View 1: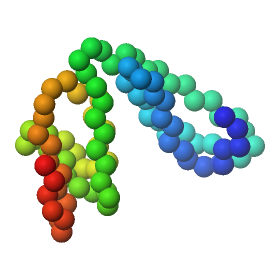
View 2 (view 1 turned 180 degrees about the vertical axis):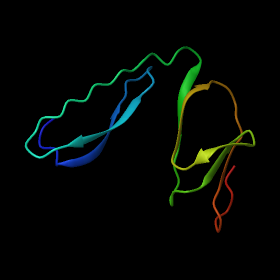
View 3 (view 1 turned 90 degrees about the vertical axis):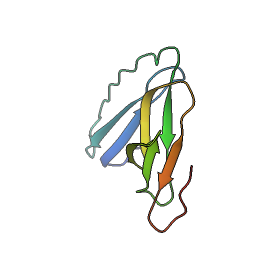
Length: 95
């Protein structure tokens, strides 16, 4: 990759069937920055679940257990059926 501006950047490495890797890297002007990432197979019966909202900051629940605040990314979610609820004050709850 070339022509990346100086500053802090988020790097995501992903490949189908593998857990992804996310890291933050600082690029200094005029210098080469190397990023190493290790990804591992996600395993049979598991997947990754990503929940976003607009605006961000909504509460996310899986089977009535709080999973986090959007954006939420959950690695190694076991395959199956779940009830997901997204709540944000001033907005209609989504299930």
